[in-house]
Length: 289
Ligand code: AMP
Image 1 (tube, rainbow, N blue to C red):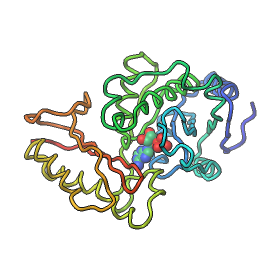
Image 2 (image 1 turned 120 degrees about the horizontal axis):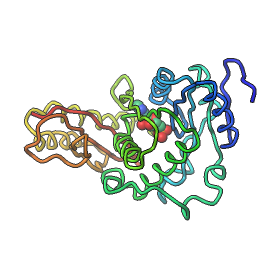
Image 3 (image 1 turned 180 degrees about the horizontal axis):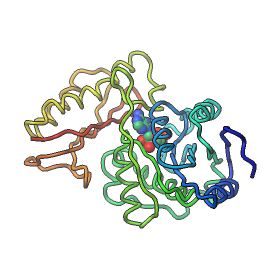
Image 4 (image 1 turned 60 degrees about the vertical axis):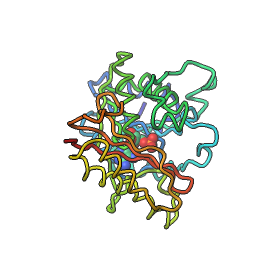
């Protein structure tokens, strides 16, 4: 396969991707994978920059995975912007974009075949509101690991439960890949960057700040203990029209289970809310006690 000088190749098939990566690996190159659903923003690009530091070859996958969307979710209207995504990745010096069609990833259909089960943490928090989401996510991530055989895969802390479950899958299934996590990239006013932010109108965009405000309130109360922290965080949602809190929890980062009230030390606060009909998530580490 010929290299395009300083260009980014968009590869739609598994066979072509494997062939090009095998060649690079035979030449001694290490490979980093950044899995995405496209509609790239600065959060994704931070992952790509980290991947470039960690490996010789960077593969960014762009695939809106139907298996991780439930009925009634935004699969059909999820933003897609392949040309702009590729331009942004070219500017960052990415070698290869893997952008398969759904039939390439699921030639026998997705739902009826072998899938990964996320385990008990997969049905909490995001998984409680989005049944099957994490099984679908882990299934596609496992497939991408099998296709790309990356030395390292880079994920965002923005999706804290996702990166926890991916790390758990890698440990439980002895997959030979290192997981690297990148901190949350935010807008100047604090809103966590998300492809779904583009669903928000101006008023909803303002209202969406309640998520990060609730995390700041929780952090400010963290020295008083978990229940005070939770009370302050939830109180931030008090009088926001058009915002519905889904969950606000404080968990042990090592287990993702809710902490007991006498817990002291580093904890992770997870929040999800609907702003209009747009589901947004955010999280922050806090020090309790
Ligand atoms: P997505 O395209 O939404 O599936 O996200 C692809 C990857 O980008 C995941 O590992 C996300 O956690 C990560 N990501 C998305 N938004 C952000 C952000 N604001 N900061 C850091 N990483 C992010």
